[in-house]
Amino acid sequence: MSGIAKTPEPPYYAVIFASQRKDGDKGYGEMAERMVELASKQKGFLGIDSARDSNLGITVSYWQSAESIRNWKEHAAHKVAQERGKKEWYQNYTVRVCKVERDYNFEL
Amino acid sequence: MSGIAKTPEPPYYAVIFASQRKDGDKGYGEMAERMVELASKQKGFLGIDSARDSNLGITVSYWQSAESIRNWKEHAAHKVAQERGKKEWYQNYTVRVCKVERDYNFEL
Image (cartoon, rainbow over all chains, first blue to last red):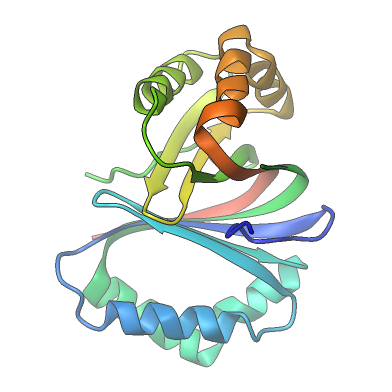
């Protein structure tokens, strides 16, 4: 079975979050887990893919609409995590909001 | 300095490639490096971000236009790499082609 997010037919939306962390966990792992759990309960959430190595982390979340992305961005608990992110966890990050126009899969 | 790709003002395009590998390198590392080098020479290429952990790899490449993505997909050397990918390296993958509508950065 694939561990890659299963999404419906395009169009749908994606948020690409690329980040470089500061050293040390400082509660990051726990918060990251909580945010994935919380995001997955939001209206319009379709799935999430995440990978991190020693240089870079990339998390891509998939959403039904631009509105569902805006709502999640403004979610109170997510706002708290965003603030801690800037102060404690991230050296730098880039967020890109995109409309997925087409997709295709390969599976053995 | 940020190690995250610097891209121009949206709109531009992104290709999100999420993959799970088979065990063993079998020439993958060398080919991956070669493909990044070759992609970066293509017309319309804007940048690339990549992260891989034990579960998943995510590579996002950024492009000026849908046409530059189509051209890269059809590039002869890239085609060869795609075929080897299906036969030798990947358990499964998903490719998503998106239009980036907005982005923002944070940097300490």
